[in-house]
Amino acid sequence: MLSVLIWLPIVGAAVLGFLPASVPAKTVRNGALAISGVVLLWTIWLFTQFNLSDSGFQFSEYLPWIETLGLNYELAMDGLALVLVGLNSFLTWIALLSSSETTDRPRLFYSMILLVSGGVAGAFLAQNLLLFFLFYELELVPFYLLISIWGGAKRGYAAIKFLIYTAISGALILAGFLGLVWLSGAKDFSYHSGMGQALPLELQLGLLVVLLIGFGIKIPLVPFHTWLPDTYVEASAPITILLGGILAKLGAYGVFRFGLGIFPEAWSKLAPALAIWAAVSILYGAMAAIAQKDIKRMVAYSSIGHMGYILLGAAALTPLALVGSISQMVAHGIILAILFHLVGVIEQKVGSRELDVLNGLLNPIRGLASISSLLILGAMASAGIPGLAGFVAEFLIFQGSYSVFPIPTLVGVVGTGLTAVYFVILLNRTCFGRLNTKTAYYPRVLFEERLPALILAGVIFFLGIQPSWLVKWSEATSTAMVAAVPTLDRVAIAPTSLTNAEVATPLAIED
Image (cartoon, rainbow, N blue to C red; front, side):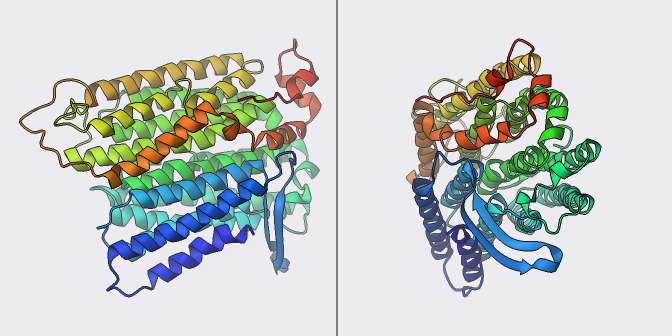
């Protein structure tokens, strides 16, 4: 059942890759869209079959593979994996929909996107540490090719930088997994073997730090973020959607699954430091975004700050904060997708991303009025305006984190205000003002170019108005993850005015 999410895109990538060169690019694109559409429909069906009251893993699959290495084909899904698999399937389809029908080397381009989709799905579903690592590394080469072949003027530099950072991330994660198994004496790499709790606290802390750095590079968090601006700016719009909307969430998933999930005791000890790390990332991302003149680079830096909210909720370790962090992964992925798509359309039509050049695009006669309107919506969602998906996730994080870490939470609230500042700068310079009538002869925006943004806007509105559809899938899983943390450690990082029951009791999420 779960294997379909992995192997259908991978087999589809192989089929498209070996099509004759005479097959038109439009046909290859339609084939990729069809494969991705089937995966999306299958994912939706899994949502309908998922038991919301079960906090454990569902739809389990097991197949012995290389038992001498402790590597077996183990798949399962809980609420955390479910929402991220859904995000992966949806944004892969959106990325394909936003791609051009005249893309060069279409067979390779669409094959690599489908290969990324299958690899990321496998990583979200893997219940064996080595199997996770294999899928985690599977996306490395496809992304390198997608950036280096179809990227911008400095695509070679950006692709090499991405490759180096991602390789270091993978090496650290593999070292952490090997150390965990060897030091604990486990017989295999199964996630469910409980090997982390068998180690002394000092070893747990050391291995957790290694994994946090490895996954922190992928998210990325300050100071491991320097690959992100170059990579996001040089990648084409569909690939940037995948980088920011899916790949960064794979790093956050690793922090939740293999950091908090395997080392709950060590996690509670490091929680104050993690909250400070999150606050630094939030402030740095916002301040760096304010300083940018390139609107795509501005959106890229904003991603660093918004990923910091996810770490803040995880550090607070209350059910409300944790479900807010998981919801933030989904909301941020969708919001980032609409922003990068619209920036790509603006660059294509105007020929520039510079704030000093863009002006008056909201002009209904000679500007890009529909694109500008959608850009305003995306900016409002990213700034956490009520009624949109971004508000729901951030509010849950702040509400659940303030009682545990009030100062980092207040820093996060300030970061939200700064988000409004740099998006006001972006919108004021890009959409408003007087249009230059001497140069404003922009090509007409086709419906096909607006369609991905319209779909994403509809989802942002729906999840903002019906927040239960964003949070209910992971609520039971979040509560179970918090309950797994040793009671004394949770009390140690909580205010003395709160009892343990108040910290650990799940709060109901209403529409």
